[in-house]
Amino acid sequence: MIPAPETAGHPLIEATADVDPAAEVGAETRVWHLAQVRENASIGSGCILGRGSYIGPGVILGRNCKVQNYALIYEPAVLEDGVFVGPAVVFTNDMFPRAVNPDLSIKMAEDWHPVGVHVGTGASIGARAVCIGPVSIGRWALVAAGAVVTKDVPDYAIVAGVPARRIGWVGRSGIPLRRAEDGRLTCPATGEHFHERDGVLLAERESG
Amino acid sequence: MTTDAGAVRATWIAPSADIDPRAVLGDGSTVADRAQVREFARVGPGCAVGYAAYLGPGVILGRQCTVQDFALLYEPTLLEDRVSVGPGAVFTNDRFPRAVVPSGRLKSAADWVLVGVTVRTGASVGANAVCVAPLTIGRWAIVADGSVVTADVPEYALMDGIPATRVHWVGQSGARLKNVGPGLFRCPVTGAHYSEHDGTLRPLGIAPR
Ligand SMILES: CC(C)(COP(=O)(O)OP(=O)(O)OC[C@H]1O[C@@H](n2cnc3c(N)ncnc32)[C@H](O)[C@@H]1OP(=O)(O)O)[C@@H](O)C(=O)NCCC(=O)NCCS
Image (tube, rainbow over all chains, first blue to last red; front, side):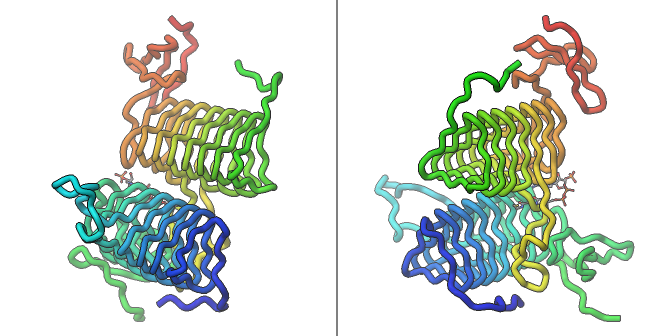
């Protein structure tokens, strides 16, 4: 669970940012130069939206998310709390894009159904990665720089490449987990233990 | 040899470029519209910074570097002289990024150690390539468009792919070298010879022919 920021305050929005009046921007959130937040987007408190970033209509961001420069988040993306989106990342919303219908008339909103990217709490998306909606990125997962994600990513997974494949596991601190001789995985930063079962990582309960 | 002495051209800054007053721009440098040059960045003489490009705080560019449109160079990037960075290239500064610390509080500058990309003299990084710090790109190396570099790049290497691997050797001219004998390479443009040993390439003291 992500605690609320200690202090409440207004969002800080640079003059060159373009925030639609029908968007909601939480307390203490910082919207940098040339960023655009479209209508009905909902941005939680304590977020940072980098220079030139784009948040599509109705996109939802939880608290304490960080969206880096020129990242493009198309609707209907949902980011839970504490998500990191690296520079120049793209979340797409149309699996089979076409400018026109088969009769060459221009495609309108009613001619297609946007599909979204869902990112779980604490997950990080590396620089210039592309996530092809519909897809779900698990909690605390780490998508490598330049990866193209085409299928769901499990919690705590590190995925890399085109198309992205799992290359390891990562803890909440962001550091890859180490495997002990007994097969258990441990986070070198927090000391938490995990075990892997059927391609899924489970955190072990604290016990003596 | 090129000299920077002599005719000094004026520095030119586009009207909507955002240059922090604490940044330093060398003589004859140009900064295009909507580019941002953050505090304490140092841009050497004769550099060109493209449209909407970003130079993070304290980023250093040597002389005659080109940073194309929308390239994002996070601190502590260091470019030596005559480095070319293609449009949309990204140099990261955090290998294991997180928005928050494990307890959920927003991560601040004090919570992580920045790591940087160093690009040595004459090297080129292609369009939309990503360099995942920490790493150094050797002199005169070329990173192909769209590659993702995750480790140090040797001098004169031509790198391609995700993750990037070495696919060829290139000379100072940028041309692919021809293999003309065991461990011996020759540049078809300049005629210069190079020898390969243990994965590294060195120019040989043989007159070009
Ligand atoms: C994925 C990542 C965390 C791996 O870092 P690492 O643990 O130091 O990994 P290593 O360099 O030891 O590489 C492990 C393997 O994964 C591969 N790999 C690493 N990064 C990769 C990437 N981005 N894409 C594809 N493959 C990658 C390596 O080639 C290596 O393969 P091998 O075992 O066959 O040799 C890191 O490369 C990354 O992309 N971090 C994100 C950086 C970022 O975008 N920050 C946000 C902006 S500041």
